[in-house]
Length: 228
Ligand code: HEC
Ligand code: HEC
Image 1: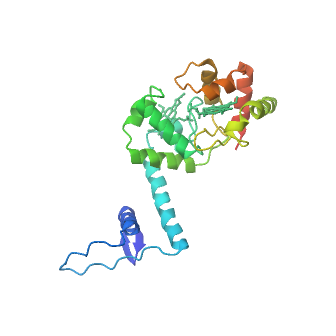
Image 2: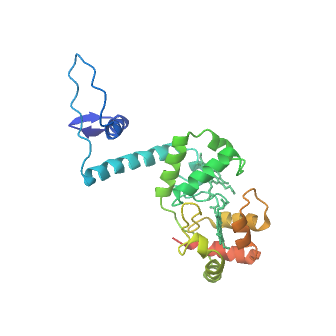
Image 3: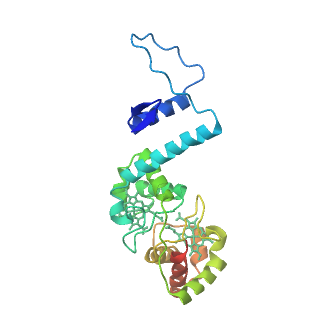
């Protein structure tokens, strides 16, 4: 329960109240005559500090809704987006816009996975946004790998991948974060781009991965899985 003006409201009601107030037009229609006296309205946030506090409540509520909506995804991707299986990608710490775009692609069939597609189709637009936000706010747990392999992979990454995936391999809105990703998933994914065997045909990724041998792919995956 959250308290507004000393009255306790369940959280969703409290939120819709404050959202409604934020969105109220400047010249609202005059209130209807009521027999009971109208409850005093909570003051809309005016100072930057109050606005920040209100926005934080909205984000926290969306993240909480995302955790709830992702209960089935947790079977494979883990409670907090750190996956339970080597071939299932971590979603924790991934860029939210990238996650949302991949969810859209699974939903439309542009990206295929026998397990994922059916699940994604039943999600509403709001749930997709909330789930993407929830996973992006979660911390990814990096994996372990052989030190010599990691050094070799770092070298390859610096030559062929860094200009798009970034110095820290954290990507951006459009480009996936690779830091802390599951090693096995990285190997499969990079190999599919190189060999053009998946439906994720991306010309940029094909050019970048073309020179890689299988051992280079193992090394770069070893490097990336250990990164925070
Ligand atoms: C049965 C296991 C399973 C379940 C349950 C599952 N996924 Fe997945 N998910 C996978 C696998 C496997 C992949 C990787 C597919 C591939 O190789 O391209 C994946 C990939 C993804 C990706 C792409 C990640 C990336 O780095 O590109 C997103 C986003 C995703 N899943 C979201 C979800 C959401 C949201 C749910 C719940 C509605 C969900 N998944 C449920 C197995 C699962
Ligand atoms: C010219 C830019 C560019 C370069 C260089 C590049 N990438 Fe990518 N990478 C992308 C884009 C764009 C995507 C998303 C493509 C898609 O939606 O299928 C991507 C996706 C990926 C994915 C899939 C991530 C996921 O979560 O499913 C992996 C793995 C990856 N890149 C690894 C690499 C590696 C390793 C290199 C270096 C050998 C590299 N990339 C070089 C642009 C680039």
